[in-house]
Amino acid sequence: MDAETMEQRINDLDRRVGRVEQILPTLATKADLLATKAELEAAIAGAIAGAIEPLATRAELHAAIAESEERMRRHFDVVAESLRDDIRLIAEGLGALSERLG
Image (cartoon, rainbow, N blue to C red; front, side):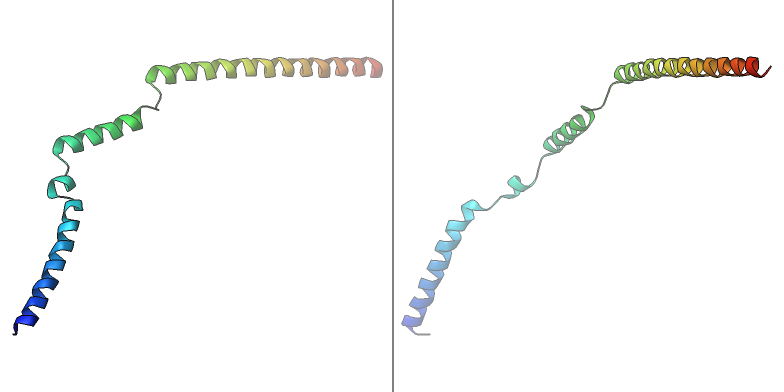
């Protein structure tokens, strides 16, 4: 190989090495890519805490159930009273009809 060709290849290699040297600092290292056990445990604990936080506590659930029971009881009391009134009206109507026919 003549001197000119060798010099050209050395220059090409020098340019390539220069480009590689510019890219190298931006690449992630093994340490950057691998999380430690403590980091993983902290991330998992945070994810679990975030998932649990919006859930109701046992006391909150019992309170909600008790409130729902009370509302339902009041509703059925109103429905029962309305039925009693309807039955009373029907009974009075039947009594009046019986008197007219009898």
